[in-house]
Length: 450
Image 1 (tube, rainbow, N blue to C red):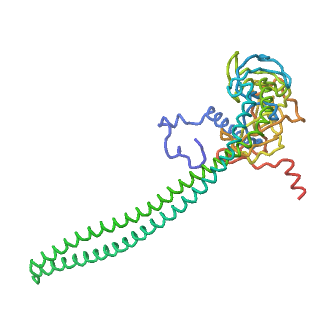
Image 2 (image 1 turned 120 degrees about the vertical axis):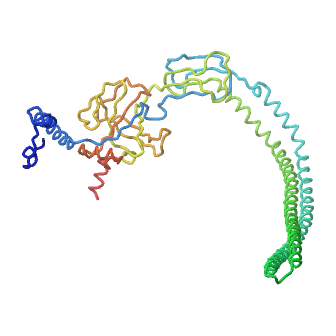
């Protein structure tokens, strides 16, 4: 019983005869339970006013700070056949060390007298330079003749189109006149029927008007067909103009193409001699590409190609190398709603998979096993996973990151924002609002200057 009024019900009703009244009668056990609920409610209410640190969570993996320090694939620049391996997986190589030797497989480069044979071909083509020039002159004359013939054909087609337009105009006038006659005949027929019903016109007059109406309807169909046929003649004449233009444009384009081909062939034969002087040097450089070398100091992680005698195309990855020296970093991904709140240079907490960690996101002071980091870069375009990528470097003023971290290991991050009451954080989360806008130390200094 709540006992919140002086008007007691037991004064008016005998509650002893009701079983429910005896069940809910006050006793010491119910009083204890009531006190427990009251104390629990007070504690929960006070708990809502405890401070809570707003934060932005993210997850990612361990990477390197610079692009040239990340694991890379070494590709073959030319197609070839594997002849000899100089390393095995796990070996340490220095910059310039030979990893693999390949041999040539393309038949275009197997001829040892390639330069000499090409030079002979150039000498043979030098005699054709004059013939190509004469051919270009002949094609100029042919193009002039094609243009004259095209102009005459176009004039003829334009006259035919003009006649078709005039015929369409005449047939359209006739068609409109027939429609007027049909309207008059239908009106006369309806009037005859009305007068016949009133006894003012004989049946013969009605039949005469009906015959005249049917003749007019047949005439309008003939006139309409004639009008449509005239419009088709206009379309045909228009298409004929387009056909003539396309036909002679094709002829002129072909003649022009032949002329340009002749000029191109003339220039090409003159350029072959200079081109061949560079070929020998290019072949020397190609011979140096048979040896695939290490671009920097590092460890051979995995041999992508294997065996001897295996052929490869240009750009085929051969091995992967992990650089020996690298600066560790973490790349993490955050939701788009939190992206405006993160700024370059802000501090962040990081913990790694496999490292003993106890994290209380709202009470960072009670967390264990987290490491300090600084945001060094943030991408302004969204990633494939629908989040924004943030690059984090170790904080030099915090404890050192574990030395046994491997590239690619999982990592989680926490960006600390404002301190707010727990009730406010619950209200913000339920409504889907972003955390409070937080300004770093740099922003606060700028406001003080203003």
